[in-house]
Picture 1 (tube, rainbow, N blue to C red):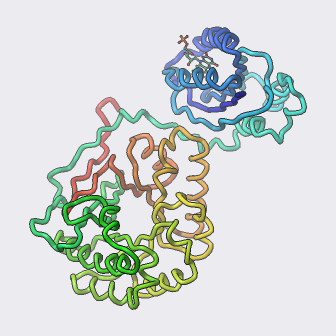
Picture 2: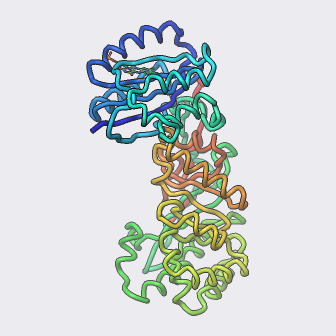
Picture 3: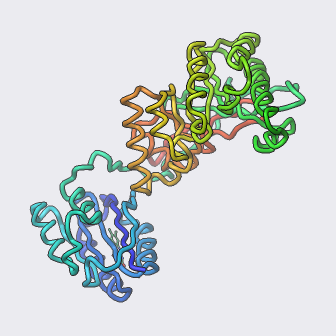
Length: 406
Ligand code: FMN
């Protein structure tokens, strides 16, 4: 199938520009043999390239390009399919933007087109060319150092690292995972994650209940989370607990119960944040919105978890505003390499900034994901890169430290 890939990348400063000329000659030959057309733009700092041809050939060339040490921060902007080729002449053509006026480059690109009717500015690929040449998105092209320039060092001696020695319930258990600000080296909150008494994952715990029993059990389990957090010495730090939205709707006086249990464990409502999962909220939004009002009136914070994972995320922000959202792992996986994910995350940030809603990101696993998200303006993170959840305890945090070579 005829496939188009467009990416942009940063040129590595230490490569002499003359190397590019040789590279273009070699690439031209390789592309021609593989039936791939390529147009490469270079502005002295950034590359922008369109590759077009049979799917397997385009993907194989793109894989080789991603590994090429002459550039870095390769971000895929488009991967699409089309009925016919835009640029029929196979090979590879380089335009050095320092030598031409932007309009001349765009006209030249249009002139290279072999299916004239497609090369209009309604074509997404052409719009990408225009945006790049006119530099209208330049502020979002973050140049990140290699992830290997950081060490993540577990701070095992930190006073926050603690474990409980006794069981707090025969019914459930909790693991605690910090939400951190890595650059400020600060734990901003702890999330209590439900487990079975033996420590198995939450879905195993939920499997043990049916019907309304589930909501009762969900609510009651929070008193165990509060007791354990209190025993771990939560102090004035905030604690996030997860609640099924329907627990608030179905269990009478659920909010009063929560407040009573918070206070019975020596905590205050203002330090508690209740997290709801986006997908579950949307099914009975009206009833749920009323229950959230009660939580807020009591001083308890509200977070939407897995934001962006379902279909309703942005609509939810129009109907009620949480204090915080947690962006879903699926949206941030490889965000440093994906133009579509970057565009979505930047739009979420813009929207939440306008609404003064705090953002944190869950499931951060790679240093590059973290660096891109920091560059985009996010400072609160949760994920295995920094700390794994610890059963009945607060785990050490692996803080990022620049390596000596940095
Ligand atoms: N190689 C290609 O075969 N086709 C290309 O269109 C192409 N474009 C490139 C664009 C940039 C910005 C850079 C840095 C490299 C490009 N390369 C291209 C080179 C590849 O990254 C890689 O070096 C080459 O495919 C390796 O070929 P070889 O394994 O045959 O030596």
